[in-house]
Amino acid sequence: MFVPAGVFLFGAEKREVNLPAFWIDKFPVTNRQYESFCRATGYRWPKCRDDARFSEPEAPVVGIGVQDAEKYARWVGKALPTEEQWEKACRGTDGRLYPWGDAFDRRRANLTPSDLARDGKDKERRPRLVPADRGILKDDLAFPLHHIVGNVREWTSTPASEAKNEASYFVVGGSAADTEKDALAGANRKQQGADRDPFTGFRLAWPR
Image (tube, rainbow, N blue to C red; front, side, top):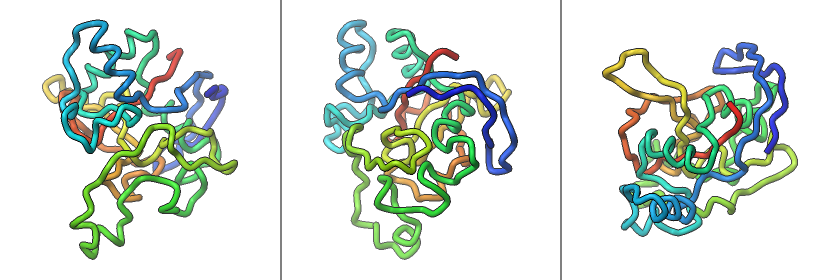
């Protein structure tokens, strides 16, 4: 998807940021795509490869760290999006809280609603990923990107700390194991770059 140049409202404080134009993938990278990379290069397999909850071929690949994602990105000639690029693709230019508007709609994203998490009704629910192309899209999205929130958190190339020994990066979008508060546009979390988390994947952008 093409995201044109211009100003958008960034972060929880909705600060004006001007970005050059860029492209971003409509879908997160899938297990099938990442497996092709591993077979072609001899690179290590994702940590979650043998877990049925996460290994469906068309589900987003998870169990990979930020360096794994960057190696795949170089292999296909793209790059991880910056935090700013990802957020503009998610919320557009008008400062909305979710891709479709300001009100959370549990039918629009694979998340764990906070009311279920709060009263414990999700204790027997094992968060499960759905295929990357099985998003619910409508005309009210800023950009028609599948699972830009929910399903899996997504790595960005933006460091979350200047401390060299921390090597953490911002992940965005929330996952099937997170609540709608984690998926707010402008919300982010720090994650160790080496963390091969079962609910963190990625999509790619270009040029940077």
